Image (cartoon, rainbow over all chains, first blue to last red; front, side, top):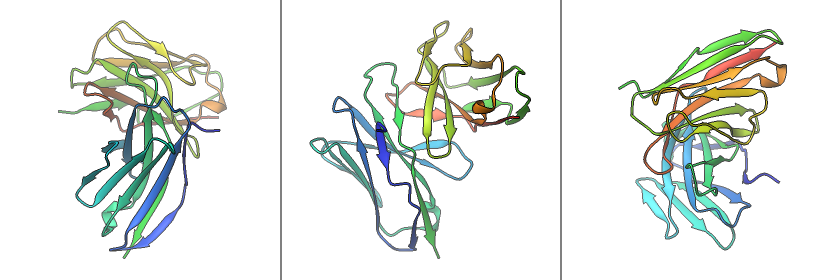
Length: 111
Length: 111
């Protein structure tokens, strides 16, 4: 079983739609959670951290459910520029700032 | 600032050849990482460094060696390349907790 599992998609949605991605992690000792974004043939970049109480950054909302070991990302009012792969990322080592990456969920926003 | 740079961007090797990938960062970060990214596998940590002169193994270290003689540089070596090492290699650095800055990647093909 992978440590971080995501639905690979692809998710194809029209502009303006709301789309949600889910992620599960297997290590209950995981401490920190993030969503990274990776554009095609580019490097990953931090999109947002995920806090226990849930957090929002503009059109993006991240939620964490520690009991179910589940993380979600909601994108409202999708833009063409949101087309990318979204990586769910977890830290469980607690040292050296090591991160474990999911394999990503591909999103295409259609005009 | 250039951020994180990687050299070369592309390389084709024959089985058994050796090469070194260079990563450089100008952000004065203590932590540096080497990942490989394969389709469906996500990013996997090869080796990492918590400071100048230190290195440690990650999830998939076999067949690779690293060195960090200067704080700003992290080198990844392949002593005898194998087709299984065909991948995209990303270097990253970090200072702020868990936000890693990635280089643009090196696409390596081993024939």
